[in-house]
Image (cartoon, rainbow over all chains, first blue to last red; front, side):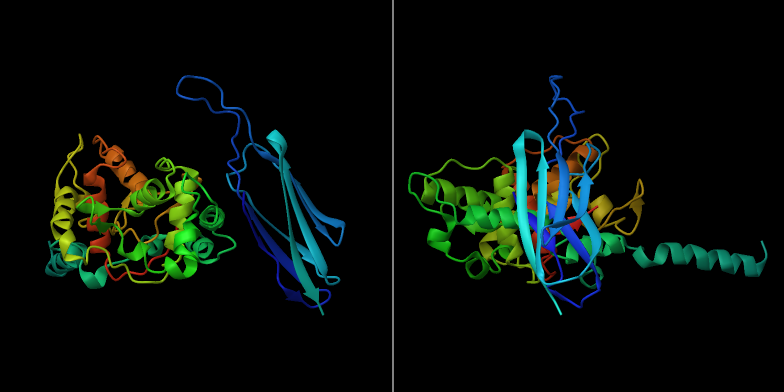
Amino acid sequence: MAALINVPATAKRGDVIEIKTLMSHIMETGFRHTVTGAAIPRDIITDFSCRYNGVEVFRAELFPAFSANPFITFFTVATESGVFEFRWSGDNGFYEAVTANIVVT
Amino acid sequence: MSVSRFIAAAILATALILPHADAGEVAFSERRSGSTFMAPETQAMQSNDTANPGMLGVLDGATLWGKTIGAAEKSCASCHNDASTSMSGVAARYPAFDDTLKRPVDLEQRVNLCRVDHQRAPPLAYESRELLALTALIGRQSRGLPIAGGTDPRLTPFVDKGRATFMRRQGQLNLACTNCHDDNWYKRLAGSAITQAHPTGYPLYRLEWQGLGSLQRRLRNCMVGMRAQPYDADAPEMVELELYLMSRARGMPIETPAVRP
C-alpha cells in the first residue's frame, strides 16, 4: 500500500495550510456480486485521522460510497514546527500510518 | 430566400464543413493529447504528483522494482539498477522489436519476458496490480520525452498491419477506429469527448475504472463499444495496433501516469 501526502514543508506561524492525502485502497463496497452471484465482502477504510504533534486536528469516518483510493484534503493552522501523523484503518485489519514534517517560522 | 439570407446560410454551411472537409487522418499539426480535452480539474489532478492517483501505482512499482523474486533470486534492480536512469525513454519507444521472437512486444510483454527469462519467475497476469505498477514506474521515467514508436525499420510491416486494423470496419456497428478518431475526434459521443486516440499516458488512471489500466484495456473497451469481439490479451493484432498508435503519436510527449475521466 502506498500513500501520497502533500504538507507544505515550511509555513509562517498562524498560516492556514492545506493538507492533501491520497491513500491506495480498493474500497470494495460490499454491494457487488461476482458473475456467479456470490456477494463480494465489504473491504473499505472506515476511519482516517490526522494528528499534529500528537493533537488530533482532523478525523473522518468513511463509508461504502467513497471512491477507490480516497483523496482527503483539509485545512489546519500552522502553530509550531513538528510532525503530522496520518492514520488510516479499516476492514480486514487494514492499518497504515504515515508522517510528514513541517517547519513553522 | 433573400440573397443575404442565402449568403448567411452558405457561410454557416461552409463553417460547419470546412475545418474537417476532407475528414482524413489527423494532420500532424492538429494532433492533440487526450488531456487537452479534459476539464481543468482533471488536468490539475494529472499534473500534481500528490493528487494524481496513478502515482500510487508508480510508488508500488518502485517497491516491486527492488523486490527479489524467482529461482534466479534477482530483482529488477539487480540488472537495471536505478529505474530513474536506466528506464528513461524506454516506454517512449515501445512496442519494440524483439530479436528472438522476430515480432514487436509491448512493455507488459517485455516485463514478463524479463521475469520468465532472467528472474525465472512466473509471468504476471495482464491488468494485474503488479504488472500495472511496474509499467507505470517504467512509463513515469519517460514523462515529457517525445514518443518514438515504430522508428525501427524492422517494425514497418507491423506498423502497416496495425494501421490496417485501425482502418478496417469491424463489429456489429460496422465501425473502424478511424471513423471516430480521425473523422470525428472534435465531436462528442454521449457527452464524452471522442479525442484523437493518442496513447500518450499509459498505463493511466481512469476515474471511471477507479484504477490504473493499460492501453490494451482501453482498446478492448472501444472494441466492445463497437460490438466487435475483442482480441485476446497478448494477441499479435493488439500489439500491432498499439504500435501503430504509438507511431501515429510520434513526437508527442509522454504523460504517464496520466489521468482520464
